[in-house]
Image 1: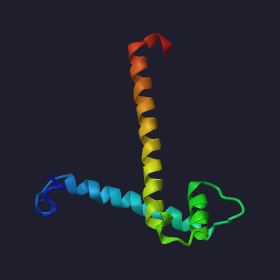
Image 2: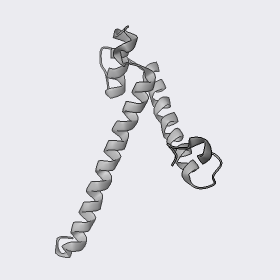
Image 3: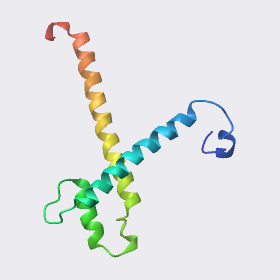
Length: 105
């Protein structure tokens, strides 16, 4: 419904508005981390994905290359979400196995 009638969804009460506020908070957190990485960037020794992306972004002058700050924010958010989901699923299955096999606790 949100994709079909976004103007209507703005006027409807409910918790659907809360998810967008929470997503924006996560994006703001990622952008603050990117800003910290830009300030401490050492091209000779990249520390992580963000540093590597920023170094590539500095080397690429082509605007169509995909190396933009908005793309970095979304890719970092995707990696964060994937790691969170994997951990959650592993813990969930671990707890289920311990419930099913109580002798291994």
